[in-house]
Image (cartoon, rainbow, N blue to C red):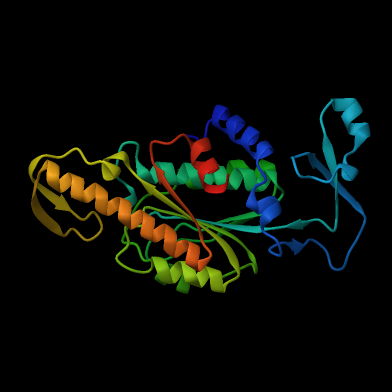
Length: 284
């Protein structure tokens, strides 16, 4: 089963052509040279995107294909893009399922990064990093990313800082996308700060289900923590639900403000959002 179908990939491809993504242009200073020193040796073509230098358009190619392409040289640089999908048990919840939504967003980020000729690493995590997969460097490598994400299963507790502590870093400066529901007892703040210490341009993508945003509950219920098994019995009323939604709104606002102070990009998403809208919310 594919994480993203062909129609979704077409929409994402079109979106990537409309916006200047941080992985391809705005991550100033985060890109590494493909060769030592500088070179004007021709390397490849890629399709023109708004913001590219018009002087590098290949007009011969335009005459043949009626589409704009720009020339790439060996001095072109790529941004290492680290994708961190949360695979803890708390993600396996909601309709649509948060875990599946997180994998879809991870696939979308990987796809547009590969379109931009950047290298992609996928790092599934809960209490630890379950492998650093990559680098994936070509558009044709996307199918490997899709297969990898499709094979992931939600399990275990979550602690982002512990996971990063045991991670073997293979790159220097770059861009990191952390995709999680944020339901961690500890480790999120420390993990984000650690990524900044590693010279990463960090994007925190918080994915919650519609049921978590606006619960539909009534009467006496037992709430069970999916990661620890701890349970609490509560009596749900309209007043309690209103307090919950107000508290959640305040929590998201506070987290967003903290991210701004840390220099982290923040986006609050719901698992019901189309993947292209999630992507646009994150990097648009």
